[in-house]
Length: 254
Image 1: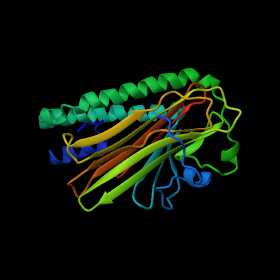
Image 2: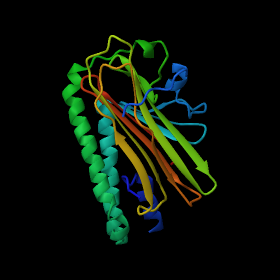
Image 3: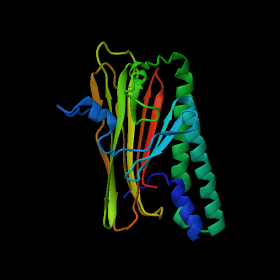
Image 4: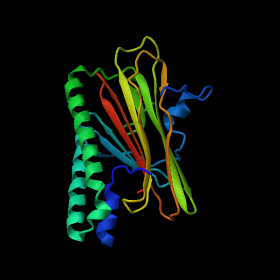
């Protein structure tokens, strides 16, 4: 059993209570890029510059953050969570239950700070291709879109059962030739936990750096938890390039 970062809903509850795999063949690209786990969702709402959110009809909440402004939003959120964790620990005196939270949240902040620095350094080299977006293939906030002359996507699958639940996450990138001269990496994580920071499972993976390829898919990461009648599940994905920007996608049950 391993422990991911403890997210904001867990903090609020405590306060209240005291590889490169081939892409599937023969599957229409439109279905892949739409996300196979989705029902008809509500429209995306803009939360802030570079940040969108919506609720799917199955109740899953999605957030999408793009570029420098999106990373700044994610970093501010992580720092707010870190401050709340400190307040809970001080107010409740329950340091043992929260002992892992500050360290894990600090790691997340460091991850986002590094990503933001890289994004700012490469921003002047961005060469966005909005042709497909202009034709209506992608909407703002979508878990898939254009990057470096190709298309990326994240596929989050949720399974809620009687006394538990599980989530899986995968990221992929498709690019027609001739290939753009940019390197890319994808990070995916699946997490499942109760409202208790000591009962958490997660699986995460960084892809190797890749370029000059038509298709790339990460391994599928998976996490589940039981017994509980209210599992907390989250899928998280991040794709970055050395010259075309980045994208963060989060899907969660809370």
